[in-house]
Length: 261
Image (cartoon, rainbow, N blue to C red; front, side):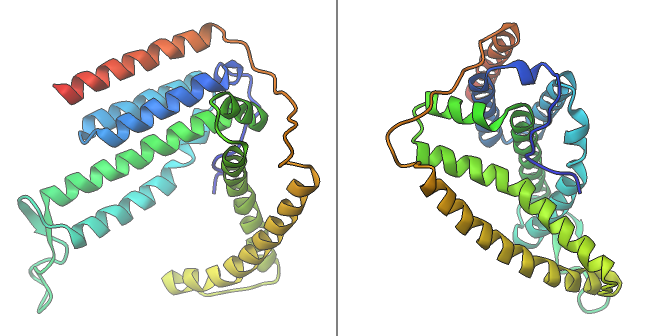
């Protein structure tokens, strides 16, 4: 599985931008994705973010997350079909030809539309987060959040949450490889995959709790709660920042026009 929310050292356009510009772009795109219920608008946002990732030379990292998003989308569609029945019935989850239980779970247009909107929102949000995290060093992100007057405690929690995701993913992969090296065979099929999760989740949670304790002690030893702070260095605003700012303004105007129209 490809790593998510992991900074990549690439000499791209987005890596040379100021973090404040990328945070503003992230907020605008997420707000537009939340407010929009049109699948075409959401698909346009996905195409825009992916095009920017290609310009920034990390489109491959975004494509690596597509299988996971498709899996999540399939689960959302199934859950929505089971729990939501609005609009016209276009079929049944279990064909009517099946005896006794056939034809009792209708698939409606309203459920499919709602599931499509939710799935596309997941694509937009994850792609936009990836665009910012891949191209922004943690120290630049913290400096930008402090410029926005976000309390240092909340900025630190956000950074730890972002950094823990790839760390836990890598730790889980190592545990899985260790189990395979010990010839652990949980079996085949869905039952085997479920059984294979137990020897991974338990040591993963245990290691995460241990790291959290060490992290808390480290924070206290470094005097986080003292009032003295080392000032961060801002990246200067360049031509890419101004171009992205123009795109942000255009997105706000287009979003307002679609919402009000």
